[in-house]
Amino acid sequence: MTTLLVLLSVLASLIASAILLDNYVLEREHRAVKNKIANVARMVAKDIRVINKVEDSPADPTIQDYANEVMDATGVSFVVVLDNNLIRKSHPDESVIGGTFSNVKDASKSLNGSEHYSRHIGILGEGTRFFTPIWNEEGEQIGIVCVGYVQQTINDELWNARKNLYIGLGCGLLVGIIGALYLARYLKKVLLGLEPKQIVAHMKEKEIIIDSVNEAIIAVSPERKVLLENVNFNNLLNKTEAASHAIHDGYLSEKIFSLIFDNVFETEKPIANRVMVINHLEFIVNVQLVYIDKNIYGAVATLYDQSELQHLIRELSGTEQYIDSLRAQNHKFMNQLHTILGLIELEKYADVHHFVRVLNHNYHREIGFVTDKIKSSAIAGFLLGKTSELEEQGVTLTIDEDSHFPAIKIGEMLHDLLLSMGILIDNAKEAVQNSSKKHVTLFLKYDADEGVIMIEVQDTGSGIEEHVLPKIFERGYSTKGENRGYGLDAIQSIVTHYDGLIDVQSKLGKGSSFRIEVPFKWRNEDD
Image (cartoon, rainbow, N blue to C red):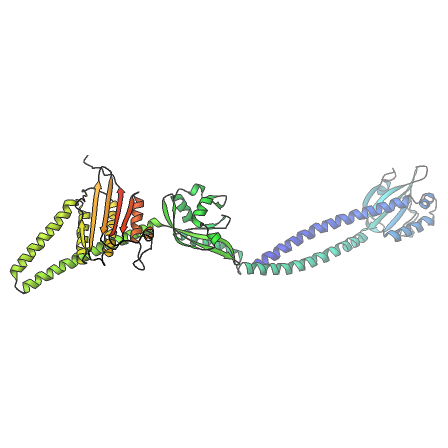
């Protein structure tokens, strides 16, 4: 298809050129014929031999001889000398000399001293001729000279002129075909053997696929020219309220360019899983350089809304917390049942009675303390489960005596608070595993006057080294092995979402303290 298109283009251009050149050659040859016969006629009319002999009767052979010389020298078809009575004094056909000109009306137009061209059929056939008057020395018209070409001669002249043109066009066509074939092969090679329709189809498929990707995609040149963008990138810009000034005249703004691509063109190093903030929204950015012939052509970036990932992490972490709490309570309950079952089998009924009373006392003591401090049933139940879970693992969880949380409705924030407490308590539990004193303290309070929820978790672990503290909130960073380091990142995301604060205090050998403050204004619906 590509080859055919190129060949048709070459053929069309050559045909158009041939028509234009042919018209030009025809016009030029006709003009040359007219100029030639006019010049020859004027030359003959001014020759002294013609002027002196044109009025002689019968015709003087000198004029005929001269006319023949002129025809031989110039190549015209005929030179006819006439007197004022339009009697021929010369003619290529000597038998008609002395007779009247065949077209009296045509020749008579020059008896008034004017010149003119005409095209008529004469004795020699159809031809083009020119008439000019003959003047004597006194300025009187004494005759007429008619010089012309028969049509066959003109056709021969035109063919000679056209022949070279057609030969040239034929050579051009041959060269054009060869060039077209070579160009078509080169284009197909450059286009990877694809036809134009296939290229269009692939482009549409590419756009559909790119727009179907969940991530936002943007590709730019080193000069900030936008090479590619998908629908999700525009949606992302709209989400960040940066769409109005992000792309202008096909170029990415310097601010967005520096945020996404940073110094990737200078360092020639890709960017992997970097967190970027645009108008208080966090995105995970990956950037790869694009090379053509080992030269940097541009870079393509994918952006993923981290809020969705953070939400997923929170859900998974929260689910894990609930499962661990249920598992711990189940273990504790099963151990107690096994103890009671063993005492019954030994027929130690008094001991069974005493054990049940102790369990009942401890249960009410623990529940009573927690429910006295924590009026929110969801949080109280969560903390009771955590207490049992840590107790199973040899860690003591203590609720600070100054803690107090009223039975307020906190809506969607409840899940995030439970998740944050669960992560901090679990981290504290792991921190004290190698300590002689395995103690974790929780402080939870809602300050209605300040409108803030405060959570603080302290542990008696070994503490955090000073150079590690700045990194503990980075996603994926952990000193506890692979596939860790997401809990504190989730907490930081929660705190940032609610415009809160998080503070860490740690001393080597003495433990660590994590404190969270989240603003919350509660309005009693009964007020």
